Amino acid sequence: MHIDTNLGIFMPSYEKTFLRIELREGFKKLEKLLKKAIHNYCSEHGLAYQDFVFPDDGSLIVIDRQIIAKARGDDEIARSKDVLYAPRVDVAIAPFNLQPGTARYMAKICEYIERSDGMRMWLDFLKERYYENLRRVLGNFVAPESASIMDVELLSKRNPRCFVAVEVCFGGSRKHTLGSLVNASLLGYYGVVVTGDSIPRKKVITVESVIRLKYYLMLMQKFKAVGEIGRNTIIVSRDQFLESFKFIN
Image (cartoon, rainbow, N blue to C red; front, side, top):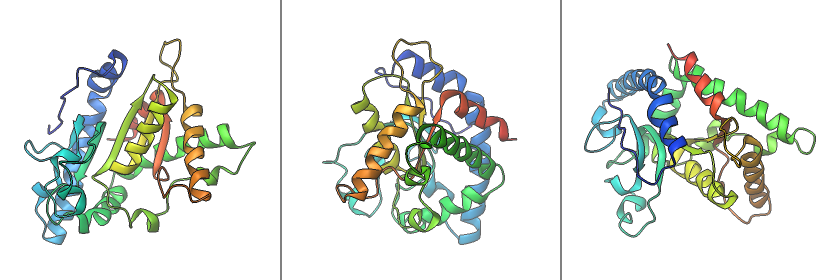
């Protein structure tokens, strides 16, 4: 299996256990679907499969790695990587947009993979849980659509570094969590923020707190303070994320 399991020494123990042990089998099933879908897309369009996997080791799922630092493409992000902040994303899921020429295909290959067998069920489950969370948190205050996910037309205009960027936020400050939300949004075609609602800590980051942070970003966009940041993110709890892998055969 092409799953990178490098884990940084600064990641808290709950997060390490979640990524290394609890998600192991789910990631293995996800990797099989990704490999098939990427191979099919590349075969149909005359592209090289290796251009869309992680450089150096060919991984399809990488954990706690700097994505931008590996960029070898021909866009401005790749050309500026030596002077850019390069965040370590908790999980990055292929295909990757890190090689010359991949940027022009990224939105199309992500759309293709999203519609493929198994992947569609996985993402649909996560989206459904997210919209349930939205209704619970914002339903009596504001229309949940205000914090909905981008439609396909908007997603197709993005230039992400990977298909899905996952940030695990079990603890920490709200400012730190806001940074994780932004990183997931900027790096992934889809961003997923996994919260620690059921983690036995005195203070945990919850679905409610992250949705409120996302709605803050949505309001800033409405008042033209920031661009389209956060709209492509899905916010689910640890238990909901684990449950999503049950829908992958």
